[in-house]
Figure (cartoon, helix red, strand yellow):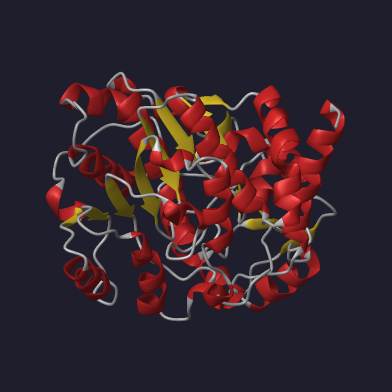
Amino acid sequence: MTRKEALAWLEAQYQASYQQKGAASKSDAWDLTKISKFAAYLGNPHEKFKSVHVAGTNGKGSTSHMIASILQEAGYKVGLFTSPHLKDFKERIRVNGHTIATEATIAFVKHYKDFVEENQLSFFELTVGMAFHHFAQQNVDIAVVEVGLGGRLDSTNIITPGVSVITNIGFDHVKILGDTLSKIAVEKSGIIKKNVPVVIGEFHEETFPVFKEKTQEVNSKLYLAEKTIEKKYQTDLLGDYQQKNYKSAVQAVKLLNGFQITENHIQNGLAKVVSNTNLQGRWQILSKNPKTICDTAHNKEGLELNMQQLQKESFETLHIVLGMVNDKNLFEIIPILPKDAVYYFCSPKLNRALPAQELQKIAATYHRNGTIYNSVPEAYEAAKKQAIDNDGIYIGGSNFVVAEIL
């Protein structure tokens, strides 16, 4: 297998994973059998390093990067596994901020391609195996592992972490995880392990009893970060919503046994998340005149926070480049968006994308009016041409929309 063939095969696996329109309709269509078999074939690399496991509807990516940054500032060699990627598959697997090398990716594919195909592993199972294998080979001191979806049956859930984190619970992927917050919380609470402390980022009266019951069942101590972390910190991640995320991150590192984390490490780590981990797409400022912001928020709760943040800005006119995937409840999301903005409707390049025409039609019923564009870049270029220096441009609605303009 040549270098070119290996990369093409990996890209084909990735594309195939997004050609399945909602691959599984229920979480009970999954189990951990295949990833456990793959891990055993790899020599159980996940047992060779300590870890932090991070789940949640929103904020789990930012929180994971914050935890990794703090640990790096403390001098540890830190693996970081997140998903999805924005521009390059290798973004998912980092050690001290550096992505896995292309050659390491190719070597892994060449060595394990046959096993992956024979056992019909999903793209995510392949990626998890590659990440854990890489972290073990790199002899990381600890890895921060972000859940892909849910928790209970997510492929990352073969680890036994030093601490588990659940940032919050909201309505997303309801066809898979459940149509109530308590059902979704049950799936997320599946990462809670026996005698492993768990950090809950935000209190919610419907979900907190689920977490409390689970921790009592497995003898794990529960920490509510929004109550236990009162100190204010500065972070280079913009957006007021990051204050919620850093509380979870700070509480998590304080609970890690065997790691020496000082207040200076926490302060420096939070101040240098972007430079330490290369996180992108979280209230990222692309230009100042006009002020142009992109953010990967893609569900009701995440977009609500972003719209609240936009209200604090003083724009002459707000231009919104908007595209989404087809599993979101637009009847809940569209009313959150401002009526007085100019909209540029587009569709990201993937099978699960919501057609821009459909997005425009539903938005119009809520008096959010705008023009349809053939692509995300075309919509963005149109917004840039229309906007003057005192205006603002917001690009979002999906990870995949943001990926196309970075």
